[in-house]
Amino acid sequence: MVANVLPLMNMDRTETECCPRFDASLWDGIEIEFKDCPFVRATTVNFMHIPLNMGGVLTRTWKKVLAAAADCPDRYLILSTDPSPWRGEHFFLVAKDVPDAEMVRISGNFVAKVFEGPYRDAGKWAKEMCNWVSSQGRTMRKLYFFYTTCPKCAKHFGKNYVVAFAEL
Image (tube, rainbow, N blue to C red; front, side):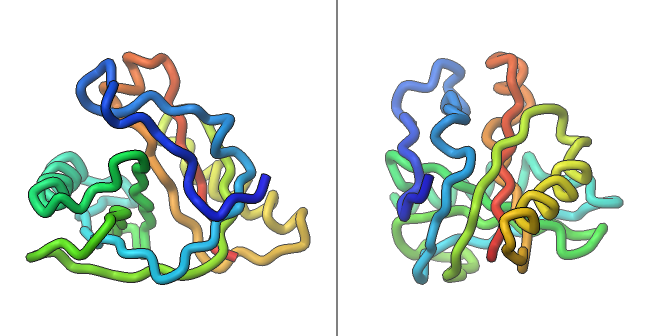
């Protein structure tokens, strides 16, 4: 399925008061084109690709986004990547610039594939995604992950969905 907008997510009626319920069928296989989309960039300290301060970084950054009324009320996306085993980068999709936050603009064509399972499978998913993109005759420039729920909400929902976004 080709789409040029992200699937809608109901942010108002979250049963956990935290993460929205995720519908994997809306995301699997979609193609997205970002054109100068605004994102807030935040970084985590990692140890061998395991973030050590992710909860605090995500909470602080999301509070800034909400304080600036820059959240997208019907869409939610945080793209995460590890440029090294020691650092993670996280990009929060926003509706407008956020004061006192590092703003970046992302442009490009992306294809998404949904995975389900424990976070420790990310390395396996990265290889699968690379093979999947190659099997379509395409080349992946960069890989991001969208962790759709926090560990507490994943336990509540009984599923831990992660969306891999390949920049083509």
